[in-house]
Amino acid sequence: MSLESDIKSLVKSVNMELYDISTVSEFEETIYRISVLSSEIVDDKRSSVGLDECANLSRMISPLLDVTPPVSGDYRLEVGSAGIERKLNTLKQFSLSIGEKLSLVLEGKIKVKATLLKVKDSKIFLDDEEYKEIDYSQILKAKTYFEW
Image (cartoon, rainbow, N blue to C red; front, side):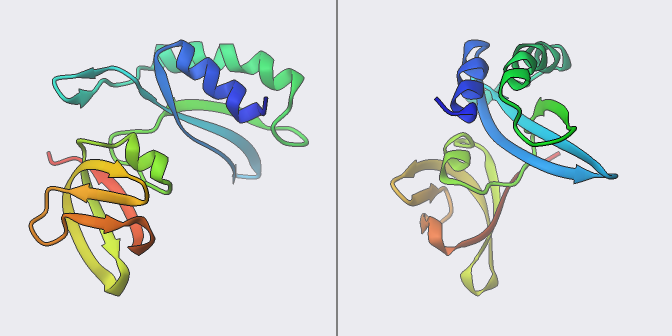
């Protein structure tokens, strides 16, 4: 098994979904960042992920990274919620965002705001009159957003 699949298994064991893993450098420090979402859906909305849940997951993942370091050299592990407003970079991330409001930039600089209804193959389906079905390859930028 790969490190990512091992992390994914640990995340699933605490009723969460792995959203993203990235390695970033901030202020001359390397950060191994793991972003998660709750698996629980209540009233068609995804439940939030709390600080205690992230800390617990961090304690679970840390021994795994001691055995299989994700990067060479020193790094800091950071486990957190993917957030209510987040970038969407993969079809998997779109699948984890069904039912949420999206802001998209398509080829030709077309901007669309709509609710994501489903993802099938390489297409996303929206509740928009003009853009009901969009091929993933046409999307230049995508993010979820929250209307306050």
